Image 1 (spheres, rainbow, N blue to C red):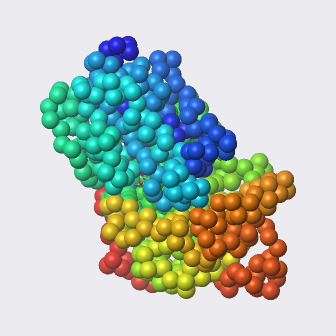
Image 2 (tube, protein in one colour):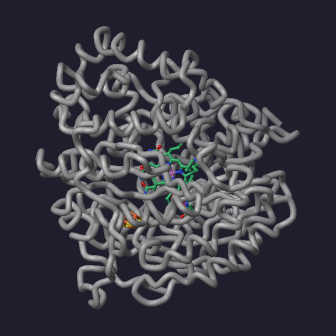
Image 3 (cartoon, rainbow, N blue to C red):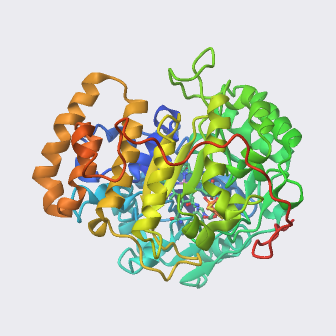
Length: 554
Ligand code: B12
Ligand code: SF4
């Protein structure tokens, strides 16, 4: 096969396809860990994905499976293969006319990514970026480039344009946005040697244009909704119109994957509670429950996981958490001793908290708390966390440091919220603001790790201190951090980031609080109780949908 190759080759990088330990968390690390130290950090598993007998990939990111399904409408299966970088040489040959590459986070310049690689030095790129380069510059592509078109698409394709790499990487066409209604003519033209545009902008497709996938996606991703509508200004999917995938298609997507060996399904959405919602973001608990049970009942599915959810619906209707728990917790792959579930399982859902500052919240993301008012945001967060934790939902929450115009007073409000969550069962990921393309903040200045203030560093390392204490309870691991942290500071950190990171970093390394309390904003000794408390109830204001919120279509 190597000499002639296949007409259409679809590929994804190893690190974006990895299913290691069925862990979304571990895959996310690949977007952040510095490639240079990957081996030392033990992440070389990132390039060990499973391949089928014929060399094709067993699983690739869901977006690429959607492209494959669309192309199968126009081309026979024998024309199309899907593979990883190491198998490109098997499939790219004289007959190859199009290579389509998926880009989730190809340069590692989105939230929470370059900041961590950056901690090791400015020129240190994350694993994702190194793996993507290995794919896009693969010798097989270079050898056959004169007779094939290279098309790159996916949620991170903007990064390539942003860094001006389209020509250097010899990419004929970059596809941005949702591709359902643009991809078929593009690939037909490319396969038949007709000219194709340098750039294509997709748009929100009609529901019926989203195809059922034909093969297995990484981590068993099954889309249940698309789009959002809450309108956060920093978010690249805020403008995608909202729709729920029909239940029959959801179940079929799970079935196809289970038939190919996936025992875990990840119900994928911007917000779980948008599924089949009523007017004004009303949660549809019976529909959610039906869908959870239908997916859990698919033959071969042992685990069911979640992606994103907003916290406000949990506070409006706490029973939704209880109702979904038999599947969300009982069929979760995650375990933690703090869970009261008989097998210590817990449901993990990504929740964007983003800020504790009411001012920034009101300015950039007020739709996120609807139907609550922006000034209720800290209460919504605290109450929502209490409700979730009681039901053994331990969310993975993100905060954004350095939103445009953030002042020390804003950072202090975020720290107050963080302090009030000190006993929560959760994981908290501090990210740095990145002006993503196709968002309302795209023209704003991104936050830079080298310019973080001492308060921002305190926020950053307090998050990681919480995570370390909650997820790594082994005293031996703590000892390693306690010794490693001062070493890191004096050998690398001080030189790269100056003294503002010193005391916050020492908190991460469990330096005595009696010493740190005079130097940092938060005082972890008994001298200071959190300024915020979880309220008994958070009243839902009686107001209608504000005019600033785009109303969901479909
Ligand atoms: C599931 C998911 C994950 C999973 C699985 C990822 C995987 N590699 O399989 C997990 C949780 C592990 C994950 C991790 C990360 N993710 Co993610 N993830 C998603 C999520 C929720 C769904 C993806 C999906 O299946 N969507 C449905 C499909 C159909 O949409 P799509 O992938 O965009 O594909 C369409 C187009 O992009 C295009 N397309 C896709 N592939 C191709 C290929 C070609 C050739 C062409 C022409 C077109 C094309 O056509 C498709 C149909 O319209 C999205 C949000 C979202 N709803 O899209 C975020 C999202 C894609 N992730 C995002 C990010 C930032 C990350 C991380 C970097 C997070 C982090 N900070 O650690 C990591 C990176 C991990 C890695 N190694 O790559 C961002 C991307 C931001 C950006 N624009 O740069 C998104 C948009 C979330 C967000 N709102 O910020 N992610
Ligand atoms: S709630 Fe905000 S951040 Fe989350 S998907 Fe919707 S618009 Fe984006």
